[in-house]
Length: 260
Image (cartoon, rainbow, N blue to C red; front, side):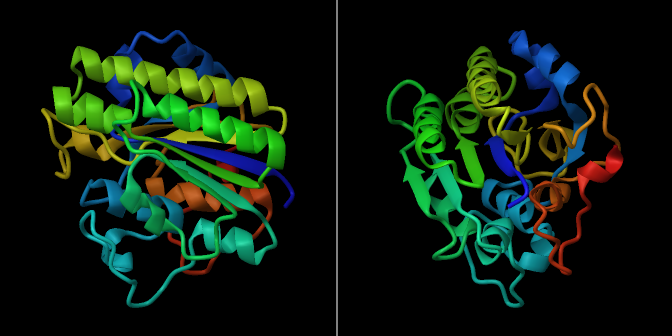
C-alpha cells in the first residue's frame, strides 16, 4: 500500500446538524480538509444500500440492495475491502449495527469489532476506543469506523435536529478529532455520512435525507478547499487513489484527489 486510510461514516449526519452541533472542531475541519456540505447520497437513502454504494461505488439499482436486508449481487462488483485484500493489504472494521458486516465479503477483513448500539452511553466512543487499540498495535492499511448513535439514539429516537441528535453529532466529531490528532501523520482520514434524515425517519429523496457532508484530510487533499459535485459514489475511488491500488472498471464514482 502506498498510504493508509481511515474512513469514518457517521450515520444520519446532516450538514446543518454538523454546523449546528456546537462542536468547535467543525470549523477546524474546514481549515485542514478538502470538504463539501453538499455531497449527494443514493436513493433509497437507507443505511445498508447507502453503505454498500459508499464501499462499492455503484448505485443501489446496480448492486441490487434496496433495503436494510442483504441480497447477493446478480452481477458482483468488487468493493474497497476486496480491492485492498486482493492488493495484499489489511483492513479493519468497527461497527455498531450488525447488518453492516455484509458490506465486506468473507475473508476481506483481518480485524472486526461489533458492539451493539445500546451498549453504554456512547457506543461510538467505545468503537473509537477499539479502533485506536488496533491501529496502535497492528497498523492496518484501511480502517472503517462506523458510528451509529447519531442515527439510532439521535435521529430515530429523538428526531433529526433535536437537542439529543445534535449532541450525538458532536460526540461523533470528538471521536473523529481523536482519530485525526492521533493518527493523522500516518493515515489520511475521510469523514462522511450515509444519509441525512427528517422528523424521525429517512429514506426519501428529500434534500434533508439526500444531502450529507464529507471531509478529506491528508497530504492528497488541499486544505480549506470546498469540493463541488461530490457523490457518495466518490468515496471508494478516492480511497483507492490515495492507497495506490487502482480502480475497478465497474465503479461509477470519481476520485476526489482529482479535485486538487
